Length: 133
Ligand SMILES: [Zn+2]
Image (cartoon, rainbow, N blue to C red; front, side):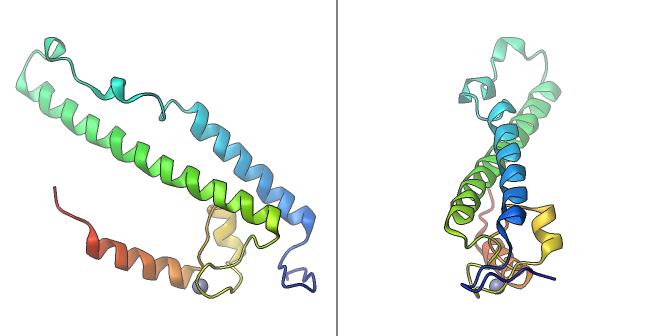
């Protein structure tokens, strides 16, 4: 199923180039998606708020765009790391166990740096530390 490259590589160059193209495209989408504009667009001018319902909606909206933005930023960082790994020829290996990341997973999330087992483990750990408010 995989093309082994002797020195521990799991895929051939053509395959990596395919993911590289995907990653560059995703990176461009994030950079051009307007999510990384200055934080000014997140400010709410009180003059524009006719009543409290709208205020509440705006705050919710603000939080949503904020969390989308931080998620996109995190994704962007992971994309950068993945691109770096492609250059080094270690793309597609789990950071924790050096096992090959499932192809289906890479197709879904080309920036994935952990196999499904360790990704789920991280997620469980992270959710423990999520603060409320
Ligand atoms: Zn792993």
